[in-house]
Length: 282
Image 1 (cartoon, rainbow, N blue to C red):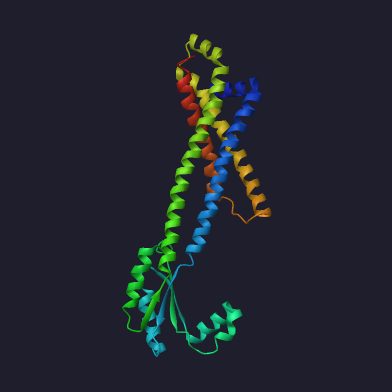
Image 2: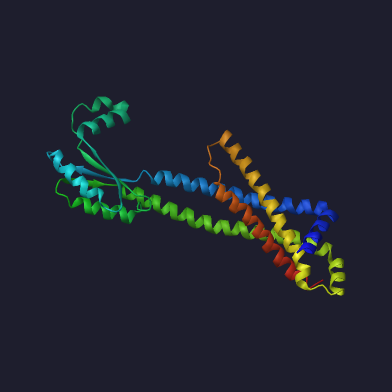
C-alpha cells in the first residue's frame, strides 16, 4: 500500500497538468450531477410542503349539538391515519371566509357556512387510497352531512410525486453513468501515458494487482477531489439561484457527504474498468 501511494504521488508530480485536467473533468461531470440533485431535492421538498396541506373536511349537519361532535372527535382521533382533528364552528368558518376572501367580505353577512371537522393525515398516509378510506369512515357518522378532501387534486399530486421520483432515479443513474465514462477516459489517458513504465514493472515481476493499485488509489483520490470541488460549485450555483431567482435549499450534511463519497466510488469504479481493459493491451 505504501509503494502504491508513492506511485500515486509520483504520477501527480510527473503530469500535474494531466492530473489537474482529470480532477477538473471529474468535478464538472459531477457538478452536472450535483445540479440535477439540487433540483431534485428542492422539487421533492416543494412537493412535501404541498402534500402537508392535504386534509379531509367533514361538514357537520345543521342542528347537530356541539357535544355530539366533540364526543365523536375522541374516536376519530384514534384512527391510525389521523394526526390532528379540529372543530371549526359556524362562527369560525365565517371569520375565516371574511379573512381569506376580504374582497368579498360584504357577501358574508349571514351565518350560512356549516360547521366542520378538519382532519390532517399523518405523514405517509396522504395518498389518495388512504384519504378515500378515511373519508368513507367519516361518512358513517350520523351527524356528518358531507366529506370533501379534493380527491382529484390529491390524485394529481400523488401522480406527480411518483413521476418525479421515477424521473429522478432514471436521470440520476444516467448522470452517474456519464460521470463514470468521463472518469474512465481520464484514467485511461493516465494508463496510456505510463504504458512504458507499466511494461518495465511487468518485466521485473510486478503482478497485475500491484500495477492496478496506484491507478485505483489515483482514481479514488481524484474522485474525492472532484466530488469536493463539484460540491463547492453546486453550493455556489445554489447561492446565486437563491439570490437572483428563487429561494433554494442546499443539501443536508448527510447528502453532501454522500455526494463526495459517490465521487470517490465513481472514481474508483472508473479506474477499475479502465485499467482492467487497457492493462491487457499494454
